[in-house]
Image (cartoon, rainbow, N blue to C red; front, side):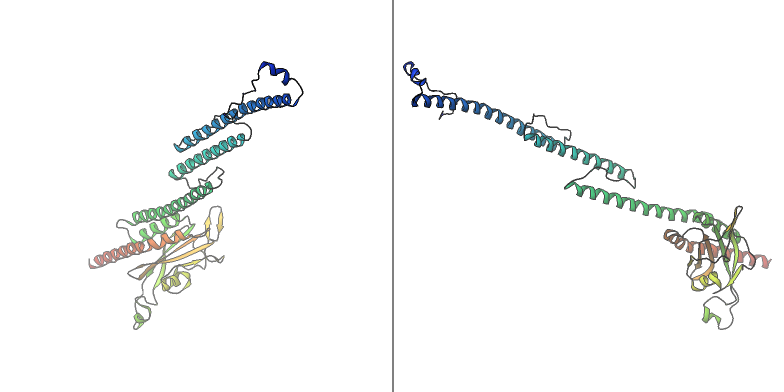
Length: 339
């Protein structure tokens, strides 16, 4: 037994067997020794089985770990887990399942981002340190959506600039040019009404130049083109500098945006009835810092920052186109008068 042989028993001579069967102390000692040897032998078998099971569990944990190390997420526990080892099996299967769901979720989010989808979201349940991955994915999706939105708005502005330039190209007379401009701007902005005022310069009186720059107080802003505009009784078709919103925008050389519109200010008429716009934008266009005219836009809806940015960018081009057309008209008038 000292050498590990748990099956050893007392091997006594035949003449002592009778002694063992007796109830004396020697016989009892012998029986107790043999019983201990039998119990130890059984314990050895149980211990060996326990060692074998433990070895299987360890080997299984190793094969699962190696599978994960090489990126094989479909690896599963194969050993037979017993007793408390079942908890290890459950933990492994849960970890593998959670990891697989996270990987699948990362793939679907990444594919959505690559395809330009703006509202892709993480769907799996992230736990522990995986929450950092979820936060990173959601941040990336949010930033991509914002970048895509900004790019779309910039594309809208650039497209509008290009299309407006096409509408202003060629040798157009000033009336045709004004009508093309106000029609395009009103429709492109999804507005409901638009008016184009052209500055008609008056003669400068003595000392007036120093007071008002290159514009005379007799200068007028005259309505020359419109979109969906109907003249109403008592509504002016021309304004002096500083008169009304149109004249004030020209005088200050800056845009004026008004949200609270009086009911009698301007009217949008259709075959189904009429209504007052909720927002009015009055914006002058200049050429070499000199006012050439004013554009007025009326809309049922709020005029957005992007729409304002678009108008800010196209106003200089409108000023150039109007000045060119005006100069051409004056030149043709001079040529005709010389004849």
